[in-house]
Image (tube, rainbow, N blue to C red; front, side, top):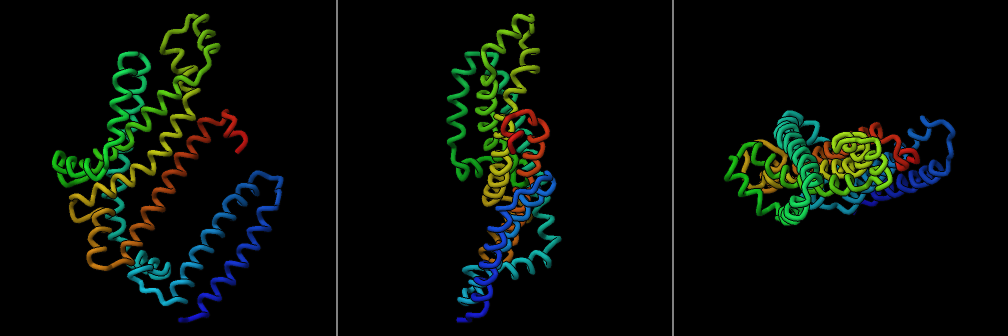
Length: 287
């Protein structure tokens, strides 16, 4: 057992903890300083976790097969950029983005149709609840048989996973506007579509963006899991399942790191768009 890496990691953790305690007590007046502080504190915390991870693996001589140190993972990422980029293109740029757009779009349009039809509201919502409960490990092989081994079958899984959260949140959002506001629109002789676009959809925007943020993570998970059940020799899920069998755990962690980074950036992009669109909402004003 090597104590020095562990001691160094613990000392770094203590110093970073003290620094963060000091930073969170600051009250800067400028908005730019507050934004910088909001980024700096979690960044320091994240680096601290990586240093502790490295120190524990080195200090306790943990086998890389059980837990790969971050330094080795970074070396694998740096040496496997072409492979990681090809997997990213196959999984994220094709299956995730296309399935996300189609699934969220279909859920949104179906919610509008349900809002117009009480029959669909009573008949389609329970069916959507049933579809949302389908296990992905059961749906993915069927989609592979239907749409083949390439990305369309993974996009189909993503569509199924993202459809129901968008449907439910949009239906709830369309009912969020108050009866007084709807009555006021009727007194102005507004049509259904005028009321929808000028009152009900703006009121439903926080619900819709909530579904978009949830689906931004579900889509990536669905695409990666779907690739376990059949895919060409490229893709994040394919690489993870293949490299686990070869005991190349550093490559598995490299794919996980890329997937985590892509999912976080995707979520952050949706959150930024939400802030720009729903700036009027109390939650945005107080953020």
